[in-house]
Amino acid sequence: MSSKRQLGAVPAPADPGPSWQQLLGAVRALFVAFDAELTVTAYAGGLRGIHGPEPVEAIGQPLAGVLPGAWQHYEPQCRRALAGETATVAVTAESGTRSYELEFTPWRAPDTAETGAPDVGVGVGAIRGAVATVRDITALTQAEHTQTRATELFETAFADAPIGLALVGLDGRFMRVNDALCELLRYSESELLSASFQEITHPDDLDDDVDQLQRLIAGEIERVAMSKRYLTKDGDEVWSNLSVSLVRDDQGRPAHFVSQIEDISERKRLEIALQHLADHDHLTELWNRRAFEQHLTRQIAQCRRHATPAALLIVDLDDFKAVNDTHGHAAGDALLLCVARALRARLRGEDCVARIGGDEFAVILPDATPGQAAHVARVLTEEIGRTRIRIDELDVGVTASVGVTCLGQDAPSQPEAMAAADRAMYADKLTRKRRL
Image (cartoon, rainbow, N blue to C red; front, side, top):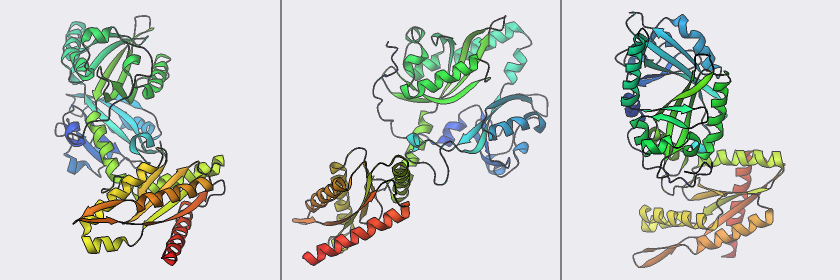
């Protein structure tokens, strides 16, 4: 097994499976999201109904009313999570019969690498609230009274846990793994015990993982809690919630890690699928107008900051209404799909192309000079002009008008750039009509 960080290409995720509500409901934990006003905004998990109200009753309620234990025991941790820290506290329910572990983590705006485009008006990484994860630790608390009993409970929990568990050395090598982890990663026990976590971690997540463990060893944090990707023996990508604690020896020196690895791949696939629906045109699978305008805003900022060139193209199909009126909307949709494929075929991978209206498309050309942008506009016009579909023994095609506006260090705002490209497109359309 290679120890290189570059572990090869990862196949695309499978189609989404169960909903995230169903997945969370199968987990023996309670997840409570709350905002800066300490008001509950989401409530799910396998502990609901055992502790606290049902989801419909919890939403909009004060956080103190739905979490176990006395409010003053965990209020500071709530505040720390809203300030960007992760905090953990153990509490006892008011009845005194059950104990819980509450972990508070900040909820941040998603990264563009995962979602395709950030939420409008919210910076990447901005804190939008926090999430309390409640786990029932009554059995573990009671087991502390007897070392023998504690050992028995640990052995049973380790072997039968529904999530992956591992003891990991300070060098990253696996010392012990349970069946759930072997099944998740598709390695045998012996194969994992001869490997390190570095070898099966997605290269893009490795540096952050190692940095967090170094902070844990240094005593800067009490626990590592992060989402990361592993690579299975077959090379598939597995998203997980990783929780790592540090075990010290009798002299207080770091001895090894205890890792809990919960598979959240289906939830991630669902999130990615939902984000794709939100950002892409349902017919052509190109970016939609909302996502395109966000891409354009970022491109303009880059042009201004680094004085790099770029170009914006608006592509409008000529007399497209006649296709719908004569041959029907199904024919019009088929022609739009052909145009979308033609645009993608003639553009680079780094170019951004979108359908921003019924028969209107838009393109961003990063690092394109005015001359290059004009050349691309001519190529796209010619390519669309050659596009044909067959309807009732007839070849049906369409022409296009293209407007170009160049961007640079003095690039206008996103709406101004769109308006300028629109004007250029209508000027091109008028010129084309005069030639006919």
